[in-house]
Image 1 (cartoon, rainbow, N blue to C red):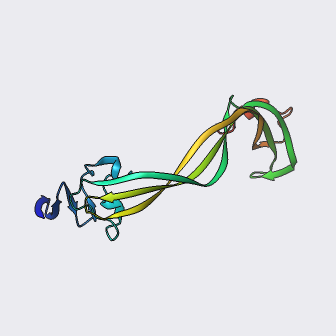
Image 2 (cartoon, helix red, strand yellow; image 1 turned 30 degrees about the horizontal axis):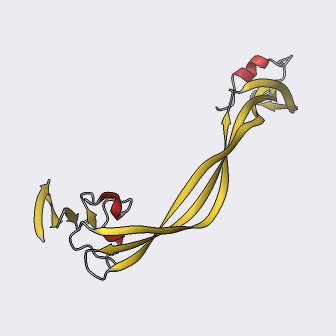
Image 3 (cartoon, one colour; image 1 turned 180 degrees about the horizontal axis):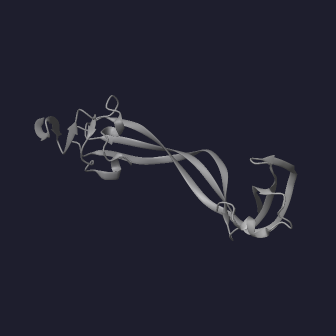
Length: 190
């Protein structure tokens, strides 16, 4: 093992060169990617899949894993709604009996109705348990490694229909007839 010290301001940091990459004991991880790439898994900064009590890789280069199969664990569906149009004003009405607010001016609630069309996409997700058989350079060292992955497919989609929402504001009672332009000042969020 070789030790390399690099000064960072007033604080010195010690890194250990372990075969093919540097290890930072302060953070408890390697500071360089594993040279064997995806063979070591999705995280390039681990050592033997973060399980040194069960696995070893003395040269830091050879962990061989072979895919042994997968088992379906479960599945579920999700759906998303995407608008096909912007909100369009549909209707306005006044609700509630007049109430006095502030300086004795009677107010009522103006409710504005908005509509838009939307599109639905349905996704199917399947969770799998993958099994790998692994071996290292050390003779007689073999183990199984398991991982999870999700497969997602968009299997259905189409027009979902029309959705409706409402916005409201207080207006003085003396506004007659209802001014539709007031609704344009309070459109719904996109």
